[in-house]
Amino acid sequence: MEAIKTIGLTKKYKDLIAVDNLNLEVGHGELFSLLGINGAGKTTTIKMLSCLIKSTSGDAFIEGNSIIKDGLKVKGIIGVSPQETAVAPNLSVKENLEFICEIHGFSKEKKAEKIEELSKQLGLENILHKKAGKLSGGLQRRLSIAMALISEPSVLFLDEPTLGLDVIARSELWDIINGLKGRTTVILTTHYMEEAESLSDRIGIMKNGKLLAVGTAQELIKMTASKSFEDAFISIVKGEKK
Amino acid sequence: MKTLAFSKRCAKEILRDPLNVFFGLGFPLVLLFLLSAIQANIPVKLFEIERLAPGIAVFGLSFMTLFSATLVSKDRESSFLQRLYTAPLKPANFILGYMLPLLPIAIGQSAFCFLAAIFLGLPVTVNIIFAFFMIIPVAVFYVALGLLCGSVLNVKQVGGICGALLTNLSAWLSGVWFDLELVGGAFKKAADFLPFLHAVELERAAINGNFSEIFPHIVFVSGYAVLVAACSVILFLKQMKNQ
Image (cartoon, rainbow over all chains, first blue to last red):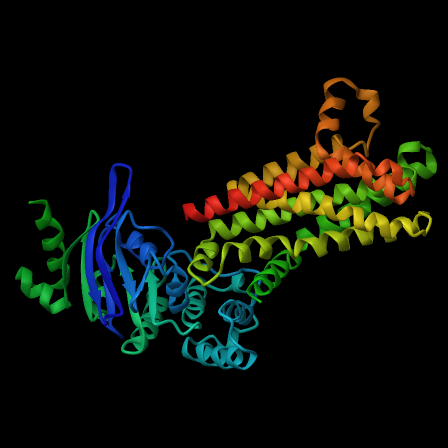
């Protein structure tokens, strides 16, 4: 059984088809990137898979649980780090993490253990008592990812995790995301070519709600006879126009 | 447990904002002391402590609407709610989580107000306890109104509507600052129709031990509290669905 399987997943808004008949399978521990220009349907896909919005038709299964029928079960096994940094600003880093543990029903011991583990893993140990709202953009993004990871999700959704970060903060976050490979299934949306190429096991390229191509960066380069991954991406996205 | 965790977080967010503490606690007390000082120099029946203290206690609660509306709209705008909608929480966890922490804050605020009033000469009687009980439906009304506004307005709109408009309406139409009979006409009719005047009269009746005068004010206030709470739940669920 795949970690994620979508069958004809579609989302329509009046005249606009945001996601069009998406059929996709993602394996356990795989880091899968959804790449596309703005409005390609990446965020809408993540929102459907994380039960934030309902699909117009089709279904998707997270660890075998339908996003339509078993929404609450799905919510119990996923973690989401939204595009905008979503932290409680007047709570400290530790309190933000504690809060997420509590809404997932963790015991006191497990809560302490997870906070220690996650703060080490994401380099938050020295700022545990700082207010989240006072942190830099990069640190807030790290906290946001820690909040998504602390519930031990089987599947983690990272929506544009490095958007607006400087080069150093981005590089540090890449290291963290790389460290998740093999342990957690990660779905990452991005429109940075180098991010998708560097981090992903496989990449899905989307445009106008359609999944145009799926493969490793090398496979996509080969498929389009391009010199670089960026050229491959351009070729795939432009090719659909023809 | 999940509701409690969410309530705890909401309480911390509200109480750690110094502006909230000033407007929620400091501002009503400043008004109470100021108007009592005026009353000491130029006695006016309206500002006698037995009439003034219940009015200020109710007026102070209008800030609860501002607090809860600001918190909900900020959570919506910052994607924090979006994150929580992907967690295994049910709608009741959110609604109760937002409303529950504000009720003790509201009651605590009223307690401070009555304590200050005792210092200014309010007789210590068992009626103060009754006034506490009577403040609960008023607090529910204001807190629910905050959830309602926070579900439909953005942070900027909340500032204008709950921060400026509601606090002014709540003041003008409550009969705390001036005798509404002197204005009369449509203004008085509007005041009679809305819950603000009834909330103040309910508290005045309770604190003065005039229990027969509690009616019909308690019916008006409780009716508004139930109606606004029901509307706030519907609108919160609607925005939750729209996410």
